[in-house]
Image (cartoon, rainbow, N blue to C red; front, side, top):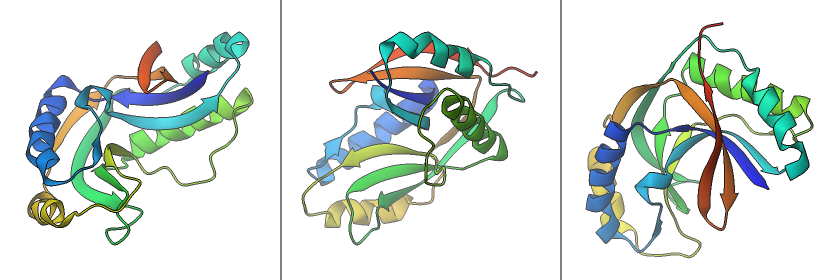
Length: 180
């Protein structure tokens, strides 16, 4: 089972993102991620044995938080860089609460045997990808106009464990972010 944990995007912000992507999609031949699949990954787990799924769920359910997490989606950018553009993303401000949730998720997962992440948590939404060089001039020009604009914000009251199979994401369990 290929698993990850993530925070879902609010319906209101999905509407804003859908409008934005409808405007950008015709400008470049990229693999655009459907809006309904957008999420903020808090921990990539990778392959996990099905017979240990309940153990992982219990570890995630034991995460304590200080309540809902404020999510602010603000800027657009390229990974690994604008010159070597392979992934178009929307940046998520790494608030203290969001970073704490990612750290707690990391500790809970590694506590049951998931490999520790070796990179810094950088929250984002992957909007589009490409493996080959494609003309991006028109898209980059459009992005320059909206690059630092606020896209949306909301309060996330939960995170979820997802199964990724054949490009489809299935929510296995949702965990509430409540004051402990």
